[in-house]
Amino acid sequence: IPSKKPKQEIKEEDLVEQPIQEGEGTIFSSGTTVHGKNTNFLSCLAIGDFLIIKHPRTNAEERREINMVLSNKSLGIKVPFSNDLSSPIAFKYQNKPKVMARDINKEEEEIEKKLSVFKQPEKEEEEERIVEFRAKKGMWSYEIKKQIVKGKLTREQELDLRVKSNTDKFCWCQQLLIFRKG
Image 1 (cartoon, rainbow, N blue to C red):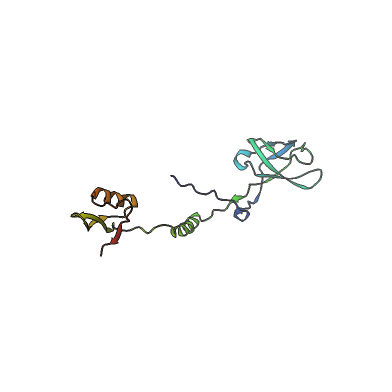
Image 2: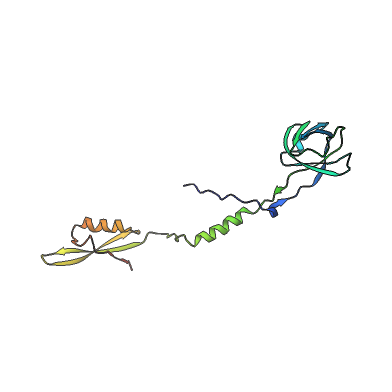
């Protein structure tokens, strides 16, 4: 099963504010459509960036989010300016905040440390084990037989060994006695 990396949440402190820059050319608008003259929207603007103007009628600075960039001379904004810009004016822009690169390796190491508590330590070589089971000897007695097995056995594998020996009449209820060699 391929492991999925958890989606990383973008926190406000991870965002880096971008500087406000002077736009190239001039713009005018009609509703949410902005047209440019001698502009280069495709190379400097993208969806989510902000267009900033000083409105000629109100003298107030207005900031609008861009929701589409159609060409070097046309783009769309989410909310129209307070009044349409009928004559071309200069503009500024600010790119959307960028996510600060976090040190993902450190985060993954921390997760591995937390998970390592639950992992079994890997053994360099397989362990030898002695499996004991009872075998019938004569009419009324039994003897203990020992068999050396490499690696760890599951309960099912232990029972299979006893059944294959075909000598233990209690193999269906007696537990195997397993001891480490040495």
